[in-house]
Every structure is written in C-alpha cells, then in structure tokens.
Length: 178
Image 1 (cartoon, helix red, strand yellow):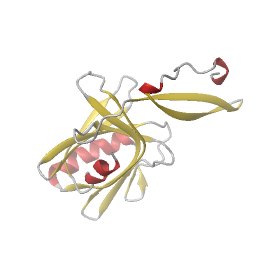
Image 2 (cartoon, one colour):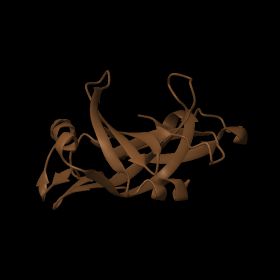
Image 3 (tube, one colour):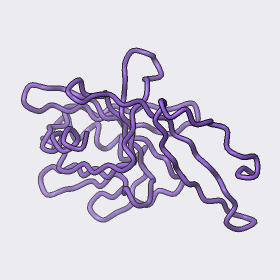
Image 4 (tube, helix red, strand yellow):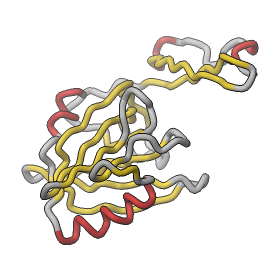
C-alpha cells in the first residue's frame, strides 16, 4: 500500500470539492490525475485544534482552505507534491460499493511558489481516505479506540488495529471507558 500512496505524488489536482458531514465537519475532496489514471482523496479534520493547515506559513482552517483551493485549481496547475500516511487500514465504504483505505496523513500541495500543508502524521489531526487500489490485495481491518483517563480533566486515545480474522472481541473492559 505504501508504494501505491507514493505513486500518487506528482498527481495533478484537477478539482477540489467541499463536502460537509453531519457534525458540520468539512471534508475536502481532491480529484487527482496522473498518467491516465484518476483517483479521489477525501481529507477530513480529525482534531478540533487546527494546528497543521498552512498556506505560506499562515494557519488556515480546513473549510476556508477548501474554498480557496476550489478557486485555485480552476486557474493554476496544482500538484500533489507529497503524501505520507500512518496507520493505514482498509474497510468497506459506507455505501457498500467497494473498499477504501483510511489513514492519518500529511499532504503537501504545490503550485507556483506556494505550498499547502494538510495534516501531520505525528499529531493525528487530518485523516485521508481513498478507493482501495485493485493492484493491492485488500486486507480488512477494524479500528478500536480505547480511551483511558490521563488526568481528571483530559483523556488520551490509544489506537489498536485488528484484522477481522483475529476473532478478537471489540468490547474492551468497562474500566477503559469513563
């Protein structure tokens, strides 16, 4: 899967579309084109703290960035310069029409002398999803998020990724949740 993601670098961004989830979170769809192949990446905020979306060294929230990028791709050649991913796993799409990959990501878009940085795999604040490529064998997995209190007022998330065939119970001990 890593080779596939690296092959997306150098793709031209042909369209940016804005979508909103039920929670009013903004999702940015990046339509990519490279060597006769098209694919779509969906980028979504995961963290409530917008720490890693930068244009020309200025912090911009994803919703505003999505509006700006929608206009930029109409007049400029925008390229996906870099994509790095952490904790990549696959699942069935919500529509049930196929499989997708999902990961915490760091994406760099470039045009002229400008660069846009989306996410940072270390801070886990941006998630990207895309269609699972047919040339990569699909491995189903399930995400389990365990929350443990680190202080009375804060919680820390620990992620575990379990293959569906492992037969592990998805119900963690009750003491792990507060």
